Image (cartoon, rainbow, N blue to C red; front, top):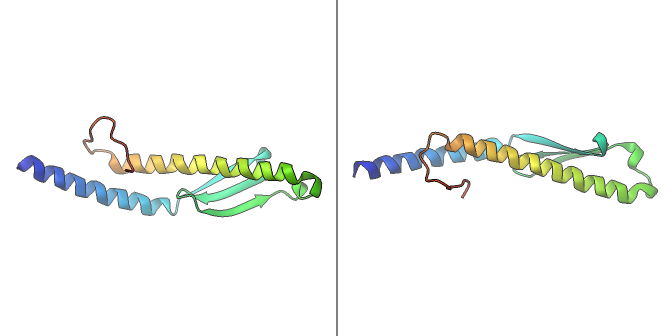
Length: 107
């Protein structure tokens, strides 16, 4: 019975840490770039796009397709960084917890 109580306490601690990590991720900002910095995307680690910056040299009708491609690349770069920040925070939140092998968070 003692093991069950300890396991429940550990689960409660982990849940609290996970909630704290999720809240922290709302304030973590990442920046994706493409075209050597001609296009930048700033987003939260939760994936909320905050700002897109485009170098004025790309704003011509002839460069429309290039700009669109650079926007996609910058967004994907920012998303990869957001995913990495999320993974890092979740790892911190679950550190010290004796989880079964192969157990992944978030659920």
